[in-house]
Length: 279
Image 1 (cartoon, rainbow, N blue to C red):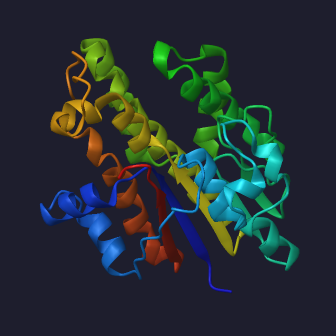
Image 2 (image 1 turned 60 degrees about the horizontal axis):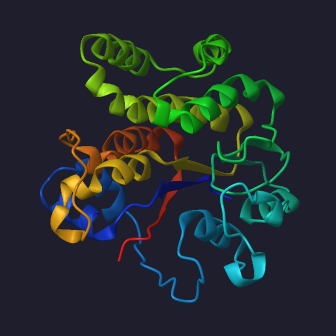
């Protein structure tokens, strides 16, 4: 089996992606898309059109009326089920990195649970130094606070598990910029994506997996805050009075750049997936 990487961009809007590609804003995403077979599926049979419902459906092939998931944190309803488990049962090494609302349990490879199912255990166990901080960063983003106790083990893990110099420089610059202007804290989502992808690449190579998933939530996170500012005419509710970053809806750009630049060296067959509730 040729190594296959399933890239999962949460809640991307195909309409906006096409618009940004045509405008030249996403050259690396264009490269990924144009070298792929592209399909748009219809989720009309889903009862609840939410990403935490649709991603388990995609992984397991079970419609939501049968798997019963309606909320975040209900991964136990599909525990041990999904494409990664099927491939593992067939003798392949697999990896799961952050896929939403799924409980694969330990696999012959690696498992990084999503941060909304904080009670799940990563595999191998050393990944807990990474996941503890990510959980705190994601669940406390509204307060813009970070768990300093979890930060030190997180940093120590990163330095020995794939952190790239360019990523480290970007993170340091982000922290410096925040001291100068607290209004740029919204860019933390980009930094987390970059660090996560570095760790993911290291895990894929270390465990020599045949199939792996990588889940990115930065676009979903930012559009929840800024989409009404970006396209106020599409909403009946007025935009909130917040200063809008220039490119919040193009947040998949940095991750797509990393994927595009590493794809050749990995000799992978990337599958790009996204779930969107946009109509």
